[in-house]
Image 1: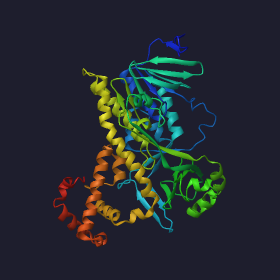
Image 2: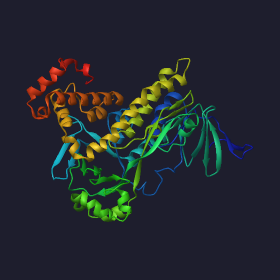
Image 3: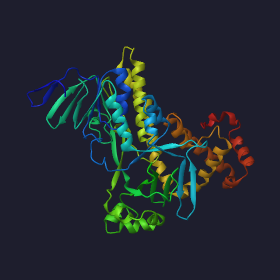
Image 4: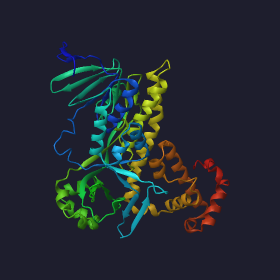
Length: 470
């Protein structure tokens, strides 16, 4: 830190700086870096505090090939911040997902009906670009090796620990972008906020998959009903794979493997095709770490005019819709917009933070629900063949302007996730009503008959909003 240090009566270093930052962002991951880039030009100096060391300086990087997805919400933020072109250069466009079913069939599902792709990118490489941009931005300072021990919501200030000891840094606002196990969130919890932090019943291992056998323009997944393997292409031509199984319970599960069942044997029984595609799969299963998935839900994200949470700190979710990071980037954009809109008002910061929370909390809850549900949709191939799901698919084909596939709305629009979820539930009810009235034979009826039956239930298809389906 610039300035000089002094010790208070409790032995805590108090740092007298040349000027305290307007904003302290706790956590310099992708969401923290994006938040700093949005805020510094409009609202004054930002200091990013990251407990880990600089990942750009680590030999061999982070040693992981974790792939994340970028869709419309993410690209909006990257474009606003001037880094979209740099990021696109390290991405792979994906036009859909191909399911390799247990009976030998394959099933291709396009991500959009007009051929638009989503984009796969290695998280580590994206993170480096964002850190470089933040470091180069006027008004942004990044401090690594700085562990935030507590947040004082009233002053506001953060108590930070580094290799020299502890110090207190004051500011005008504190933003918690420090992930699912957020230290910043504890300050809200201490004031009565209810935060649910739970470990999901799924665990996973990252598996390296050679290229050559799989189409590099799509995601591939192998569902087995109770487990799933997914593989995302990398720019190198290889694939980043993930094995998902239950943490507990009978095979296939990690608990069953730890209890004496052979993990490779379990894998081979459920994914025989992959044992040939990944020659060293037995070795990888034996040495790769088993990671858990954490979900976070908070009933409050802000405190008066001094504090807000963003990203996984307030809405960590399962990865199966590919929207955790996109949603976090959208948090940063909306927060900046809300603060800007409130800047001239008497309530100022408090009004801006309140508007941000109101705008985001319902949407984050909706995409979290959709993300967890999507795993079971993908892992169990029978789900896509139920009468309700088949009928829903036919309705989207017959009325393309009224019924847009859920994934397409999430990935290629900036519609509120809560609105998407409400419409999804209404479409479910419409399909169920049609089946109740006309029987399961309607699933295979002609387009004319299905159209007539739908119109009889919803007479004016030009105003299908009356059913909530838009």
